[in-house]
Image (cartoon, rainbow, N blue to C red):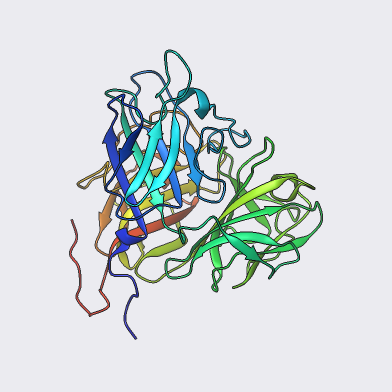
Length: 362
């Protein structure tokens, strides 16, 4: 059997960085596919901190379709109608348009001289189809090759199952209420089905049977229970589901050692994007590093999904041919001795291609 089924990871996930030019509409290219899920964050602080803004193809592009990972607001709650938004997904990227604010109309997506990053995932380039595998009928856009699906459903307030369309078991699911303000709930395989994390908060993992009914996802459904953030009665929700694909994506955990010679985490590929979170100690935020903002080791430009901050630069991590290695003794958010950290990682290249050819480190 081949080591991996995905030799070109950028056909399914890709990061694009760009500088705003203030024109509208503007089509950004270079993604390499038509994205179904795009997550944009302004990197510089030229006009102050800005929200993370996320669009998907089920909810649709538009000025009231965004969700922001650093706030609890409903769709449209980040005011992209005022500050700029994705107006369309295109064959090689997306088009951005101005909002209506007189002073900051393109703050979120295309302010002149502003620097931006966009993380993009491919589902199946549809607005979804009906899935009746669960007790709740869902709308699903799934890419089984890449292990990614976008799921929309309406909550019942009672324990239920929801079809995700992957045909394999999700290792991470990110939930957000679309129709009202509430926290972003994260299921991660290394935290388990009896606890959860909040993407918009710095808190560690919290135990509760109310989120997942102490039940792990299966190859066809995930379980929701009585909690409002992922199953409030009559509310609508979006769920981003990620299964693990050898040589392309990996979801797991490591234990910090508090040393500049930090833990090595084997992924089986050269990472292009890594999400990290301390699950032990409250007060530690989420962090994202990628290979487009950081082009050489040691890497350090990071952004925080739970914060509008422009992020910071430090000596943090190496991306290697088969995983990543922590390089900080002072950053307690990602390498406190004895603390447990979860991660999600996507590949730049597999460690070994389907033809048996190894890749090299940076």
